[in-house]
Structures are given as structure tokens and as C-alpha cells.
Image (cartoon, rainbow, N blue to C red; front, side):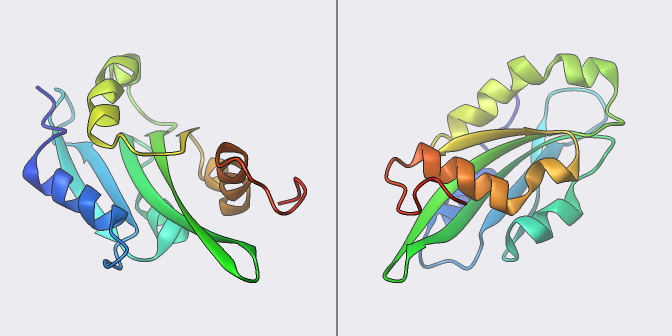
Length: 146
């Protein structure tokens, strides 16, 4: 069992989804170098930029982030992205299990508009993620422009 549905992960997930909480991301890591036990590593209020600073190049990590953006002067949208981080220095056996183990995470962090598979921090460019969220969200009031 991966422990993806632990009370602390579920609570952090609820915080990120809540309009009343300032928490806008969570990060899940493995509890040990081997095995499939997951643990809540951290949460934060600083968005993608803050989250990127917490990613470990030697690990597989799972992040869930709230992204807010404006469609026009009168409206703001809130969307959620699931990030599967596979750092460049991750051991081969850990990488090999991501497809299987990420399924447990996806069941718990179920409500997201896009999944971002990332191995470098440049894969988490906020402008690119917002473009993808706009496309996933249907109406694009910017005529396809970012």
C-alpha cells in the first residue's frame, strides 16, 4: 500500500482545493529510498515558483497545484494540475515503478485539469501550464494566445 490516501495527504489536498485556504500546492515524496510508502513532504502558498524550489533532482515526487489566471478584466479562473516529477538523478528502479505507483496518487488527487510530466524545472513554466489549462478548460477568451 502506498499510503497515498493518508489523512495528512487528504487534508493537504482539501486545503489546496479550498477557496478559503491560502495553501496552493502540496508535494508528496517517498518515505524511504526504496519501497512504495508515500508521505506529505510539504505544502505552500507561493505557487509554482515556490514549488519548483522544493523539487528534488534525485527523486520521483508528485505535486498538486492550484493555478489562477485571468481570462479577461472581469473574470478569474482556478484550475488544478497534477505534476509527476522524475528528477534527472532518480534511480532506474524508482523510475520503472512510476507508471504503476502514480495510479494510487491519481486516485487521491483526482480532480485536476491537466497532468504535467516533468524532469526539468523548465518543464514547469507557469505560462506554458496556463496555456495548457486554458485549452483543457474549453473557452479561451484570448483567441488562443497565452
